Image (cartoon, rainbow, N blue to C red; front, side, top):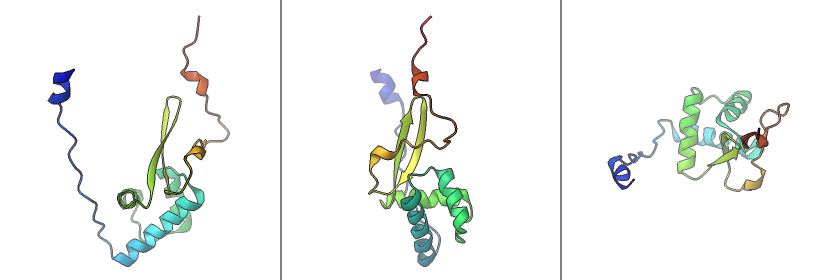
Length: 124
């Protein structure tokens, strides 16, 4: 156990993200994404991307570009990432810092309820 702990290399430190956009465009994009998450959040990346497409934000090149912007916003503590762990499923949600953490049990598919009792072993 002790040897295994020291035999693995630590995770490399990530450099801070530098967005290669004009500051005005960065401010516009981050303001729209923040407003979307504030109004409809907590949201997954896919749900955030759907909302951004509905708004028609022009500065984003694609979903991967939006993920970079979301990470940049997390570094600057404009958004936070929380984990909604229900049974064997994990769901990572973006939210503002002012959202209470007790309403993260949102089911993304309302027609299919989450079966929490399935994690228990069945008795013969």
